[in-house]
Amino acid sequence: MNTMKMLALGCTALTLTGGLAAAQETCGSHVVKAGDNLRYIARDVYGDADLYRMIYEANVDLIGAKADHIEIGMSLRLPCAGGQTGGDQTGGDQTAAAQPAAEATVQPAAADAALPAADSAPEAPQMPLRIVTVNHFAPYVDENLPGGGMFTQLVEMAVFRADPSIPYSLTFINDPQAHIDALLPSLAYDLSYPWIRPDCENPDTLNAGDLSRCEDFAFSAPFLEIVDGFFTRRDSDLFAATRYGDLAGKRICRPEGYTTGVLEANGLGAGQVELSRPERASDCFEALARGEVDLVSIDAEVGDSVVARLGLVKEVEQNPHLAEITSLHIIAHKSNQRAVDMLASLDAGIIEMYDSGEWYEIVSSALNPQ
Image (cartoon, rainbow, N blue to C red; front, side, top):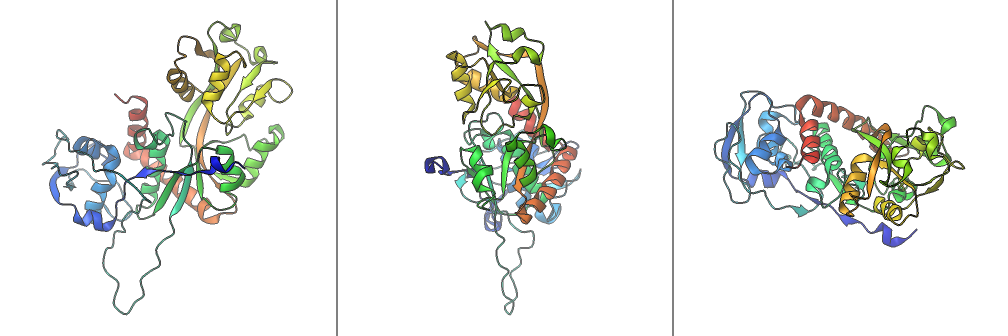
């Protein structure tokens, strides 16, 4: 394996420890109203929704160790951030500068900060949950996007909802195939995201790679539904294709890491199309622009993002007739029991996020940044 691909690019994340929270001066308060959640409040007060943990740490005695939903009428203490004061907040009119981020493992504070008795041995620190993801997958994942991208924010909030005391590390390694071939099976990392789940209930329809993914990996519940479609040149006859059969025999590019099940299910598997599998989505679109492939098979949001970034908006567009709904998941290797168990906790966390409005807030903010 190319060792350069294995270079881990450290994720920039807030370090919010018990000591930090305790050291933060209280600069104001916020009375919880209908529709509030910690992300909404952090965005309104500090201008950065990802500072929700800072508010939680300052109010863990009120909210609880499990980070249960805040209640209407609850008065939350607002710690200072970046030397600014939050002021008394009732509707989130004032903002404060966001606290500078630091490269580190996220280590949330435990709710009980009492010191151990002198005659008792301190508990061994909990091993961080090791999470790995990739870049170049906007708007879902990229370390240069706010909060690491939409899906990263969903994952981090799900961890918070599962148990805010869980420490975790987040690393970007830009070789998705290495995640499933080496990093998760070797237990170097516990979880990876985002992955499309093959049709595991119909193994006879899967290729060897997708079948192995079903047999060897556990999947979370769907965190996000996506539209999987085809991009082609505007001047191509394929732009107006209305049947999958019209794509048979064509040169299709689908980035590595994307399951090919969506192609095979529609009669576009091996032997029926000429399939290329580069590492990055941009490689597919550059090949399309050069006329080396006829179609790019990819998620619509990612495709639109890459097309815009490469300046191909006038030349390339998604076929409006052929698309499938798929979903994105977190995965763990089945040999890693701790990680498999964690998926169940994250599934519960995502349900809480639906109830609190946090899921919608993250997704809508990422898709409509203005």
